[in-house]
View 1: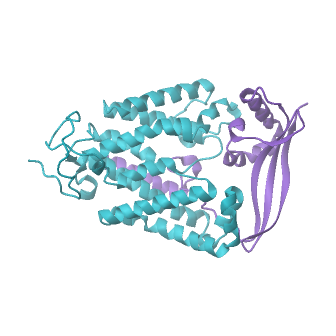
View 2 (view 1 turned 45 degrees about the horizontal axis):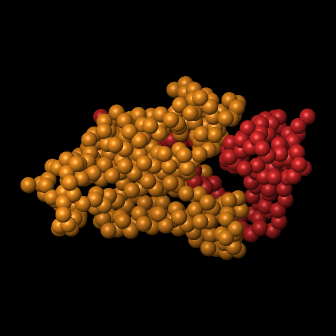
View 3 (view 1 turned 180 degrees about the horizontal axis):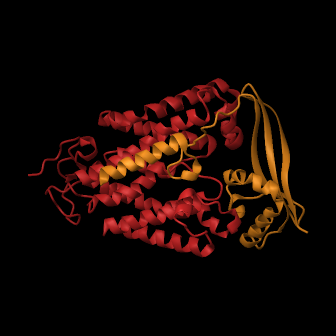
Length: 134
Length: 293
């Protein structure tokens, strides 16, 4: 029984490592920076920015959005396809920080670094999706 | 097979349980509080994992998340008492697994807790275990060996994941440059000016991962040195890119002779409630000791 349990777990883990994906958690492949980062090209990272009723530009804290940065990036395509989903960030902010100026606009901004031979040569910010209060 | 069941100290299981169950409230309340916040996200953000779809687990709502959270915390505290280790341990495992499904079903899966999940799954199988027990058992060995295998597999198989997804060029790639650009602390950013050092680190990481099974076979002193080296690696990772595998570090303790942390009573076969002996002979170290009279 115990040996069978161990063998089953090991088999699932091996299957996950060589054939599986994150969807097979906890048996998916251990992807800790497993991708080969480019030695030349663009390195991009997305952040959420908001404009408050006071006209200020602020970066949305993770505890407000309820989305960690990697989750934001995992769902990037959905936000781009339907920017209206970003309204949830404004709503979540109002719930968690009722005393603060609200968000009237939320942007998904991607910072893109240009890398040549493993060195940064320039960077630019690109707005990928925007929700604005009607 | 004999390696899997060759008796190991029961006290080590008891101490590992204390660590593992005490970590539950730390994890839930302090170090990964974002899991609880998933209850507030709209159902449309929920992208359930395979296990969630197979078992038809409920879509997280504030109620679902709160019920699981409270039940998990209560079960962990109850398990810390050492009573009903199989029942309470199984409860903690099931609730924590559901907690993980809630955590990992929103577009990002973490890879820092396979060993910890295995520890939660197998520690109950060892049955009753007292911190001051002087016994060794095959059941204790099975549980400890499973956790050891899981933590080593986390390193070893991650090397193959790198080769599968990053290709054989991974160690020569710009992955650490990429990691520093996306997550690097300001203090670590000067490392970007030394790409050669970063490539050397990439080779070091891959070789360390491929060499990790040695931890299972080397003598005790080397194993402890190896574990210390791994802890150093994780601390360094935290210092540079702010990622630390805390649940994994808890499970890593299964490789250490934890029983040396407690002074065992002189009388063999004692219950956990025997008063501590006056200062006496130091703890015998190493395999084979003590022999029961």
